[in-house]
Length: 77
Image (cartoon, rainbow, N blue to C red; front, side, top):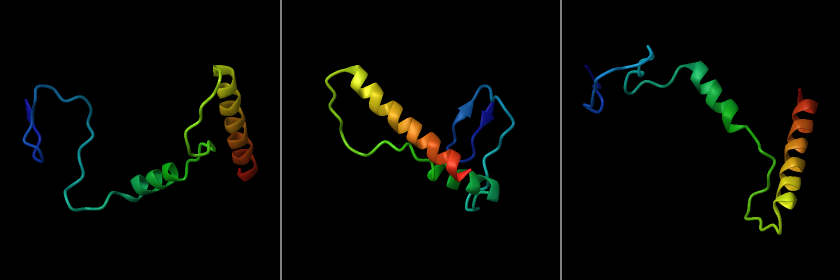
């Protein structure tokens, strides 16, 4: 059995070897870089609520937004 120092929970089995970083320390640079990269991810879908008459109309918009994002990413490299 394993006890979590932060929450006091007791676990019968722990899978994996990853450990939690010490409290009060900032995350390592690799983690911060990964978080920054995810924060810049764009879906290209405009914000808002869309009402479609059919699934085909919705799929057409989603495909257009996806292709626009792929083209933009290819241009940026």
